[in-house]
Length: 494
Image (tube, rainbow, N blue to C red):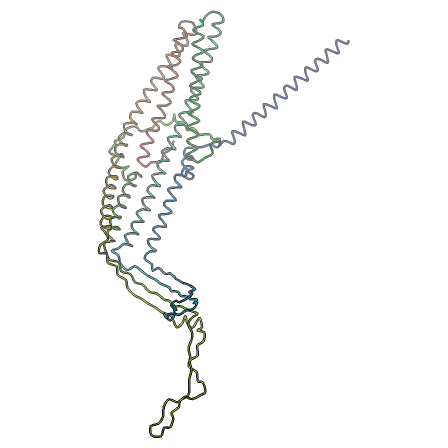
C-alpha cells in the first residue's frame, strides 16, 4: 500500500515536472518567436527606387553642392544690385581741447569745443566698359557651373547606389549558395563518419570530408562579411544609422531575360554627349572662362560716376552775434563853422548761444558732380589679368574636349564590357550545368563506393566555384547593362 502511494506520488511529481517543462518551453519559444517577429517588423524594406530617392534626399554631398548653388544665387542678385546707387550716412562727434579750429567758423580758438558734423553721400557707376553687365553674366554662368556640378554629383551617386544595391543582391545569393554548400558538406561528413565507423572509409576520407566542411564554412563567413560591408555602404549613401536594420528587396532577376548586350558605341556616344553631366559641366566651365576674359578687359576702360552729397555741422563754440541799442549817443563829428557836434545812437554787439537747429539749417550744404577715373598706367595689372583669363579659357577648352574624349572612351569600354559579360554569363551557365551533372554522377558513384572521397570533394568544390561564378556573372551582366542605361539617360530600374 505504501509502495503504491509512493509510486503514485512519484508519477504525479514526474507529470508535474513534465508539464512545467513543457510550459517553460512553450513560453520561451513564444517569446523568441515574438522577438523575431518584432525584429522582422522593425526592419525597413529597401527597394532600389527607395534607396535612390533616399540618397538624393539625404546625402550630404548633394547638400553641399546645393549650398554652393544657394551662394551663387545670392552672388547673381548682388551683381544685379550693383547697378543701383549706393547711399551712406557719415555722422561724426568730437571734443577738442586747447588751441584748435572751430569747425563751424574755421577760426582758431583756445577753448574746449564739442562739435557735430554729418553728411549723406550717394554714388552710381555710369560706365566702366560694361563691367557690371559682364559681372552679372559671370555670376550667372558660375551658377550654371554649380548646378551642373550638382547634377553630376546626383548622377554619380545614383550609379553608386545601383552598383552597391546589385552588390548586395549578389552577396545575398553568394551567401545563400555558401550556406547550401555547408549543408551539403556537413551531410557528406556525416555519411563519411558513418562509413568510417563501420570500416568502409579510411581516415584520409574522413579528413577530406572535414576539410571540405571547414572550407565551406570559411566561404560562408567570407560571403557574410561581404554582404555586411555592401549593406553598410548602401546605408552610408542613404545617410542611415549603421545600426538600423534593413531588408534589401530582391527582385526576381531570373525574369530579366531581355537584357540588351549589343550596342553601337558611336550611337550611344551621340545620345550621351548631350546629356552627360561631366560634359555639361566642362562646357559651362568653358563658357565661364570666356566670360572672365570680358570682365578682365572691362578694367581697360575709364570709369564714369555720378555722385551727390548733403551735409551740415554744429559747434558749441560758435556764438550768435546781434547789434542792440545802448540808449546813449555818441559824437561822430562836428559841423564845420559852427562846431555843432553830430551825434548818433550808440550800439553794441551782444553774443548769445547759437541754437542747435539754427546751426544745422544755416550750415546745410549740398553738392553734385561727375567723377571720371582714367587708367593710365597700372603696372600692367589689367593686361596680366586678361592674359591669365585667356590661358584659363584655353585650359577650359582642353578640359571640355577631354571630357568628351573620356566619355567616348568610357562608353566604348562599357559596350565591350556588356558584350563580354553576356558571353561570360552564358559560359558560366554552361559550366555550372556541366559541373552539376558531373557532381550528381560523382555523388551516386561515391554513395556506392566506386570513387574515393578526394575525387568526390574535388567535384563538390568545382561545383561550388562554378555556382559562385555563375551568380557573379549574372549580376555583372545586369550591372553592365545598367551602365549603358545610365549613359543614355534612361531610368535605372530592376
